[in-house]
Image 1 (cartoon, one colour):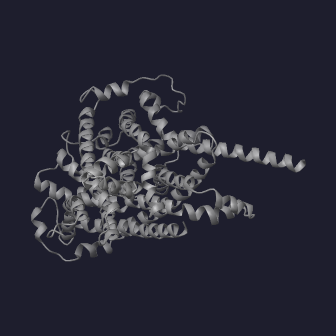
Image 2 (cartoon, chains in turn cyan, red):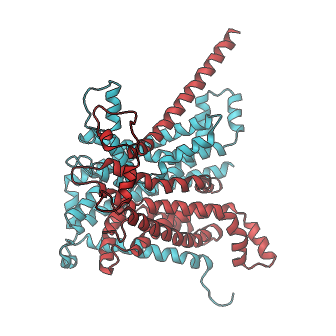
Image 3 (cartoon, helix red, strand yellow):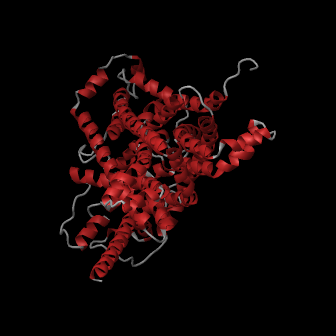
Length: 298
Length: 288
């Protein structure tokens, strides 16, 4: 060694670290600080008033916040599980298809290209109570004789948002699980069949363990941007009617920009960040575990 | 014989059920998109009609003409938005790929302390919801005076894209056998040359698809752009979409037309790289 030189990986990673520190970590530290102040955008001097954890206490005793938080968790849990199930079904359907798999795969990727805001808008259009495709179809089929107020009733709006969310993200699961199915060796399945397994047993004990890591990759990717739901909700209902579809993220945006209470909003934002991190770390660990398991078996 | 026949009928029925299921699934996937394209071509009267008009009576490109004819004639400055979107997305993608390639190479080829912790750390910066990040960024950018500029958004999108780019590129470099670069080095290449002449061309398609993924993320991003842009100086297409919504009314037809304009570049690019994209995401799973 000719004296000390920075190791190559350090040098290679330096730009990444610098950019992320400047654009993500430093601003987050700033927002952490400002969550302990009564900072309002309209009154810059309030940034220097330290009020301890009062913002956090306010939030934690605020019913609206907890309701929004719970709703976000419910939405994510239901959406991720359904996306997983539907994605699995879709992947199995496409894998079974004997012809045109390429075309089918391409169609399957279709929703991935839609910007979340476009998804929100197009489902707002389709769920419109007056001119929307859904109501028109239901009425034309004679299933209902009156217009269903999809985006006006709180519970129905939740279902509509869930539908939009599932439509836009199922393809991530479907595509990755399909990749797993296609990469799977044939022999174990055939062996299981010869040994007299029912199709369900074959799936449960042979196929599923194999495609599990792929499902976890999809989960990890999804959990990286769960907050995309903000765009969808923002445009479909904007948290309405009367806060019945308010998620943590729309609440943060409203507090920060409409009410200009930045300090408060930052405190809330920290809860939403915590939520995202928990989701990601959970799935990442599952993914790591699944990876080592697969590696050991091969 | 009888059992044979029964079996054949069952197989046939299963086959038909499978076909129907597949068709329905694909229909659900495609329908919203088709509906948007169709609505952008129909006159507003037809969209609003009660009872609904199912089969379009007349198709026209009026919505597109109006959109591109500029402000004042029922249009929005869509060309400006388009230009902003393009400049911001392309620049941030190029930078994110350059930085991500360095990082991805480091993760794929070197062993160093706290490697997996660092990888997870990078991913975690990506999980910060856009709206949560926009609050401090808005404040900092306002102070620095880079709100409503291309530069500000480019900076943000680079940071947004880098973690995922690294994940993808790391996977692609792992697929390139280490021996190849070593062989090149034995033959007299420096590590730098070996990288550019052996490893880079082999990982090239993968890197391209990582780039397209980054491009799409920037192209589609809304939460941050809606807070960090103000005017036609830097507003991107997703933010421009909101121009069609007034307090109580929405110009559905115009919105559909803009949606089509937004989706076409994304659609084209994704079709080009779809194969590599899946390969890159899953390569880590099998090789760990």
